Amino acid sequence: MAKVDRRILKTQEAMKKAVLELMSEKNFDSITIQDIADRANINRGTIYLHYQDKFDLLDKLIESYINDLGDMGEWACELDWADALVPYFEYFERHYLFFSTMLASKGAPISFRNRLLAHIIEGFQGEIDRVSGRNTDLHEDIMLQFSATAYAGVIEWWITNGMPYPPQIMAKQVGVLLGRSL
Image (tube, rainbow, N blue to C red; front, side, top):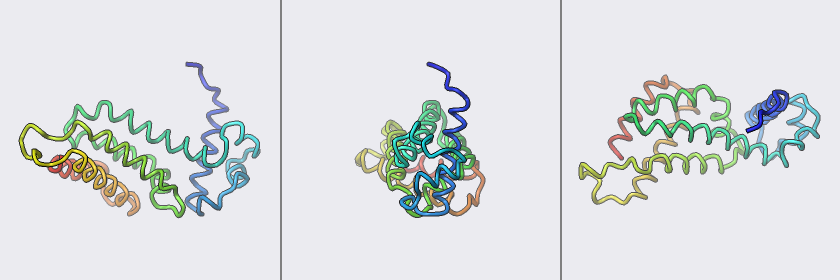
């Protein structure tokens, strides 16, 4: 894989940061390419060298965070719930600007919530306890939807309320609840 020039990475990061900051201030539909260019301190044409439009920029931004979460999931399934969730909550905390903007800003695309939920459902597949017999009469799709929606809701609540508990407490509490439901 070819190494990407640092200047390109720096420019892309500036654009992503700019769109997030703007989204925390106003509705996404009201943001223009010129607004993003001004905030990122770049020429408006530079944005078009990297992205088709503001929707493409936002889509790539969302994709990068969902991919990061997916990379974390590869090793998390080897741990118990509480231990596996600590890095996730730490990640949400480190990237507070992104997640708070996506979950709380006016006009944030619903596609983010849908993509997050789909990612969580995918991660929970194979985690349902079929050995103990407690889930024998429950349908997998209902269990996955229930647990994933609850987890996504807790993440949203935690972030939009200013993260009132540290990641370790959140992981332990949510881990216990997910362990009971899956």
